[in-house]
Length: 78
Ligand SMILES: [Zn+2]
Image 1 (cartoon, protein in one colour):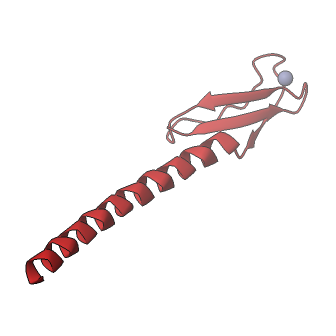
Image 2: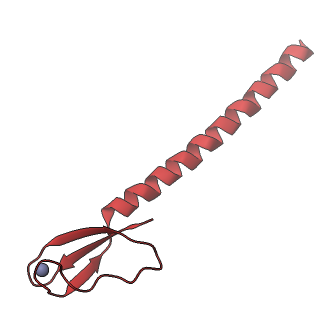
């Protein structure tokens, strides 16, 4: 679930809200009732980064297994 970041036009307050993609974006500031602007959240960017890391790690594990198999073949050949 992504984190959405909002800023209030009236009081300048920042909100970070966990929302489903299907949820409607917030429009009204809880503090002053002012209009909210939706911002691109750095937090959701970090989550994407973690996903890339996990994928990369899984790929490296597969490569390690492949290398082990190659080593076994070499031993047999020797
Ligand atoms: Zn406000």
